[in-house]
Length: 561
Image (cartoon, rainbow, N blue to C red):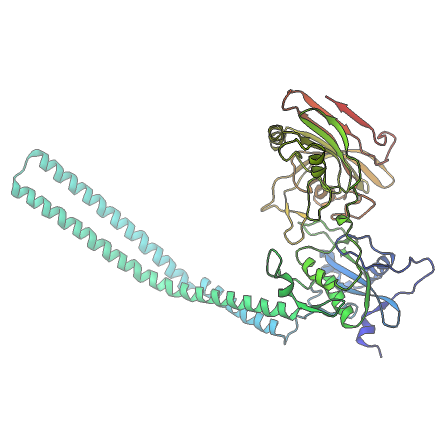
């Protein structure tokens, strides 16, 4: 009879052509899947294809993960997991269990969730009741009628006052004037009595409505209090292990993060489940991979079968703890690979310059003290004033960057970017064959708050993003294309290329929105702007060295001024 551990481990037979076992555990935020990880993922994907009962849910899309492990007997296998729940359950024989099963019918979460749901039903019932609706109508009608009567009374007072003024102008005796004064006082007193009576009538109706609203407010406060307490209790059940056997719950792990509190769904992603199970059963984690299966979500970019890095918002604080004690690969994004790379200057005068940024170098300083174009330029031009770098390129993007030597020139060039007066051309290599020869992509973009720096299509809060494109050539399974961005949003070209509502062809090597390669094949090839001092149009180009066709000679550069 198989043990629980053996049921969850899927053993791999190592073949002579297999790569050696990984020396270090995968960096989950930037990785190339190990061959064993790819084999394990292929087996999971084959299993998913056999589950016709899950067809509809899988078609809508879900993230899965695999963890290559070594048992205490030295055998190599893998564990599999899914993010969230699958088919309304957290438990399926092929996959590891959750860290905590919040779907368990007799568990405190389901019991308390049902009580909160009962409060929701009470609130909905009160808000939708005929009595409450009629009381609101009567309250509104009472206020409307009161305002009409008071308005009529004010008009009457105004007319009576005008008549008295006319009589006084015509000349009246002191006794007649005293009579007019008493009349005015009486009418004002009558108005005050009317106003008081109407306010009392309104107060009666408001009290009736207020009784309902007080009950609703109390129920909403109870719901809020119980929900917060439930979340705290739930997060306390997620007691996450690391390779040293140390335990921390989610509240501890998120205490020092900017949000201070775990987001909904924390601890339910695939990799935390996999690591937790491995540590609980004395399995040594060797490598990991997480892949998307199914349609891409409407807002994010996820491609069927592609591997993706772990998310930052939900998983990064958890994984920093859970990976403690493992020998983890260094994140390539944190390696200063260009510390000694010469910075190529393509255009320069006494006011500004254009440099050719290599792929993998930051435009401006980041969190990890890596060298950047900005720092390099400030060292090269210590007398320069202002920020120098006028615009930015992603770390993975190569190509032209414009810099100013004075604060005044910087401000004038920035104004050209803000008014979209600067013309930009990018060259990119896309996965697959793009059928359209030219066109425009218009998809509003905003940050994915749970997975920075990823961006997402956001029709509600996103900013307008427009990209014109022209297909250049197709060869060896990839499309060479020119992009002409009309706006300058973060990751605009990358998302517009990869998103199903865009071109649906990710840029080669874009690991955030496509597949990792030796580099991301996106290059800022041309800038055209007006010189702030001379008023002349400056055109600088530096063609991509993608070695794609003979028509795009490697490293060819052209300067115009």
